[in-house]
Length: 430
Ligand code: DLL
Image (tube, rainbow, N blue to C red; front, top):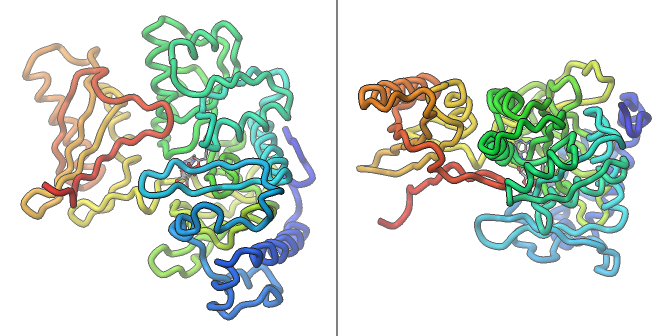
């Protein structure tokens, strides 16, 4: 189903023309920001130099650190009078990133969310439980407006109070749930404890953090849903920049609103379509906070085959962030690889924590994994067998020796929003 068929299936030539005119507009809008006036003059580029889409390579990148340095309003291109809302990123270090919206920005964002939710078959007949954080996080309000625009019955449950969330699903006949995959797992766990089979649920939308195909299978089995991946970031409004369609074979990027490139994160060189690298996005219609060649830090590749759904352009699901990647004794490890491996082993549960230390100048990784009581006899020998099996599977998947510790079911932290499963203690003061 289409929310805006004309835009969603726009032909290549029309798209390029639209993108070029919007890119020129965005560059002009960015010149209201001192950071870009200086950056353009350093790069020796003027708005008139953008004559075709490839000319974007003449423009400088924008990094997350630039946005942080501009705290709070250094990237604002309109008078505060025109700003109708502010969100911020949670940001684990230093100042958060501030994101401002004009009324038109909120309108555009709402339209994109409406496109996404219709694309996966949701309609005004659906009851949509929005279990993402409301408030400064973009997830809650972003989805709320788009779901309401379609005419769905929206339940702004936000996160937390998980038993109440399960009751609401049952009592209100919720057909679609939206949350982080980590919270989805926790919901499944609590529903199982409460003996609720969540019969009304049909569809789940998961996003805001990386999640593997095995996590998808697990969530679908335990919640009884068809699960779709939703991608976005505060700098691109919030959720909604990329979304799976019913084919579930990559994320559709809304090319009328976002121009994308893939670069080699080390050199900044643009990579050919199909090669994996860092996603760089230039939003094309953002008024309050236009950005030029924003380096997302997310690793993906452009998928070149046409999608049977008829929409343009896709990227692969995200394998992780350039800055989430752990380098352990020279080997690159993404937390999602660990998740994928653990979920394939019935003897262990789905919760894990990773600790990284430097001991005698060597990186050491310890993975705490919950046991699955159903597969554990209670005998010490059994525990050793499971421990060795898990350590072996991790070694095979990561090509790395790690220490695996089995812990009691239910003893590791559960997450309501984005999970934080890796604690890197290297460089800490001992
Ligand atoms: O997480 C926006 C969002 C809210 C997306 C709700 C989807 C659902 P930020 O807090 O700015 O914004 O974090 C953005 O989260 O650059 C990715 O690294 C990661 N991320 C978001 N969605 C996915 C996903 C929101 N589906 C950062 N798969 C992004 C993998 C994701 N990573």
